[in-house]
Structure formats: C-alpha cells, structure tokens
Image 1: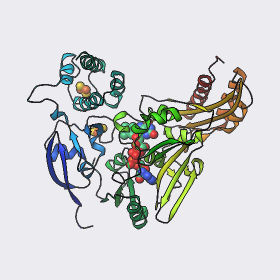
Image 2 (image 1 turned 60 degrees about the vertical axis):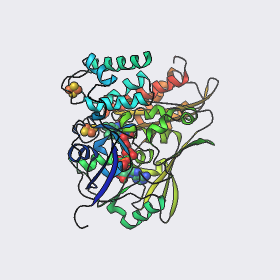
Image 3 (image 1 turned 180 degrees about the horizontal axis):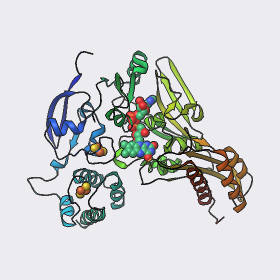
Image 4 (image 1 turned 135 degrees about the horizontal axis):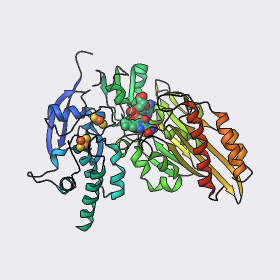
Length: 159
Length: 286
Ligand SMILES: Cc1cc2nc3c(=O)[nH]c(=O)nc-3n(C[C@@H](O)[C@H](O)[C@H](O)COP(=O)(O)OP(=O)(O)OC[C@H]3O[C@@H](n4cnc5c(N)ncnc54)[C@H](O)[C@@H]3O)c2cc1C
Ligand code: FES
Ligand code: FES
C-alpha cells in the first residue's frame, strides 16, 4: 500500500449532487461534517449507541458513524439541514418546538431524521415511538419528545 | 475514534468476493451491515489490512419463506426480514426476536449473515437458530458446505467459518405444528440480552409432542436444553413439569458472571424466561 487509499464519492445531499475525494476509511458522519460542512449531523459515541449521527440513506434511517464514505456513492443522503425549506421549520420541527421536545438539541437532528424516515414510510405513531430508544437524550427525559411525536402524527392524520 | 487504514474492495459478485477472500485470507475482513465491525474499527479493536465490503454484491439479500424453511440471504437486512409478511406467517418468532436486536435505525443495516457470523454470546438470532435447528450455508472459492447451528457456533465470537469462507445464507426450518416464542431480560429495549430464551412446543390435545428450548447469554454459544425438552415431551405443561423444567434449566447451565449480571442471577432468569415461554405457548394457567 502506498499512501492512504482514496475514492471519488458522488452522491446527493438534501437533493444537491456532490462529489468528494476522500480516504476510503472516512466515516459518513465526518464526510458530512468536515468535507461538506453540514454540522447539523452530530457525533456522540461513534459506535452506534447514541443515535446523534442518524441520517436518511435512500429514505431509511442509518447511523452515519457506522458507514464508510464509499458506501454512499450513488445514494441519496438527507440530513437535518434539508428539513426547513427556505428557513421555515417543517411540520415535525414545529411539533418539537410546540411541545418543547428539546433542550440542548444535541440529540435532536438524529431524532428528526429517524422520525422523518418513519413518516415518509407511512409508519404508525406506535412505530415512531418504538424507534425512540435508538436515540439517547440526556435532557428531556423523553416525555416532551413523545408528545412532539404524537402531535406530529395527529396532524398527519388530521390533514 | 476513527478506523485505522485498510485496503478497501467493494466487489459486485459473490465469486469476486470469494476470490478476494482466497487471496487475502485472515488478513481480510468481510464488511456486511457494519453495525458490529465498524464500532470495532472505530475503537481500533481490530485492524484488518483488507476490508471486503459485501454491500454491493448482487443476489445475497433474498428472503424466501417456502417449502418448510425460511431462507435468508447473508445480506438480508434485519428490517426486511422482520417486516416480510411471508416470514411473519411462516415463522413469527423470527420477527419477534429481531425486534430485540438493537434499534430500528441499526436494523436497517444489520444483516442476518453478519449477525450469525459475529456470534455474540448474547445475540438473539443464534438462539432462535438453535431452537429451530437451523443451518448456515458457507461458500469459498473451492466449494460450499452447510453446517448445522451447533457445528457453526464454536465459541465466543467464534464460528467454524474459515478465513477463506463466507456465509451466503441462513436456513430457519419451519417444523409442522410447532409454535415458538422469544423473550429476554435486558436493561433497555434494544440492548444485548442479559439472558434470552426461545421456546417451542408442538402438542396434540393435552400432550406435548415436541419441545425445543434454546438460550442466549448463558454460555459462549447458544445452548439447547435437551433434558428439559425430554421432560416435557409426552406430558402436559403442568405445575410439576414446570418445577422440573426450572431445575433442569439450572442444572444444564453454568453462566459466567460479568459486569452486566452475576452468573447465579443469569441462571435464575433463564429458568423464569423458559417457564414463562412455556406458559404462554400452553395457554392454560399452569
Ligand atoms: C447500538 C447497537 C446495539 C446492538 N444490539 C444488538 C442486540 O441487542 N443483539 C444483537 O444480536 N446484535 C446487536 N447489535 C449488533 C448487530 O446490530 C450487528 O449488526 C450484528 O451483530 C452484525 O451484523 P452486521 O451485518 O452489522 O455485520 P458486520 O458488523 O458487518 O460484521 C460482523 C462480523 O461478521 C463478519 N461477517 C459479516 N458478514 C459475513 C458473512 N457473510 N460471512 C462471514 N462473515 C461475515 C464480519 O467480518 C465481522 O467479523 C447492536 C449493534 C449496535 C450498534
Ligand atoms: S455517533 Fe453515531 S450513534 Fe453515536
Ligand atoms: S435535548 Fe439535550 S440531549 Fe436531547
């Protein structure tokens, strides 16, 4: 091996095509944060436990800290930066604001991406609540997070 | 932390992957869902020279529930198996157990092949495989073989899969008339089990015609409890049988203690989970 192995990785981030040349061992979380300066995706544990780094890959929530850069080549990646269009919070974010579903906000981007995936896949409010154990939140005690999920899903049903 | 450097390959076919394995052998690691291997890389607990990423290999992700067996390709994701209607009707214990494996956001990548190959002593799926008497299908550049679960799991994070081999499929047989249930004790839904139990019964009226009991979290590999199975067969699941089963479970295992739980506690919980599973399957209050 002569020098670190690199790859050209082409993929879509929040609908925008990007191309990055990076080491093959680069974690997708670092690709997003360092190469693309999308620091809304947070990094807590880097071993899959905390959920702060969760993003959508082809619509499914995944830990970006457990994926390597070449694995998103050709894929559609979505991060928390893609939720508020033109600066207006989307319905899910509004529900979190209304219910005070966050305090420090460290866990919030990951939770929002999981829930966005659940909503778009047509999953039930029970499914969405059952996905919350995949996120560690040190502030809220989850009570208001669960209230935000219920609000968001009831608006969905009402609309 | 970040992964140490490695040479990365992402083959498109099984043959290509097997060729790379033959070439690099024990210097290489297969990367499937990465939900166990990437944490180990990030923590630098493993430093393979070569990483063979299976995620772009075609034809390994099938899930086929028919003809008396649920066959999952090695690359089948846990979410796909857990949400497949055909699996839920053929072998409902599979989705039941998979709900205990990590979190939905981790199961989107977790593969069935990677999960059994990782052979964690506390992992749920190996116990299900043991209970149903399943097989693991392996391939190398030189050939293929099928191992029963007990030959496959050889120790803590150890299997009979050679460095030049890979798991290509996992077979969960569907035995006529058997119903199974899975339960576990865990500090938090989604964490590894402290102890997990997969229990199966077939019956004819008030008589047990077959029993299958497997545990995870009590030894280096999944364990089948034959003495307890034999005690149940031919009789009813009544109070006397359950008392005997509890003693036979405790007698058959000698779980090690660790920071999660002392051995004696694990042993007690194993008995409780098995008895609860039997009650649930039998229906009547016993
Ligand atoms: C937060 C968290 C919680 C978890 N909780 C649980 C839990 O409760 N229960 C549980 O069972 N698991 C749990 N896991 C681990 C589980 O999700 C893993 O995905 C699984 O153990 C490994 O599967 P994988 O496809 O991710 O394999 P990888 O991580 O890619 O690989 C694991 C090992 O298997 C080898 N391997 C992979 N595929 C093959 C193959 N086809 N043939 C031969 N060898 C192969 C790899 O080389 C590696 O050594 C958890 C993981 C996380 C991050
Ligand atoms: S940083 Fe990825 S799960 Fe914690
Ligand atoms: S709001 Fe602070 S960790 Fe969740």
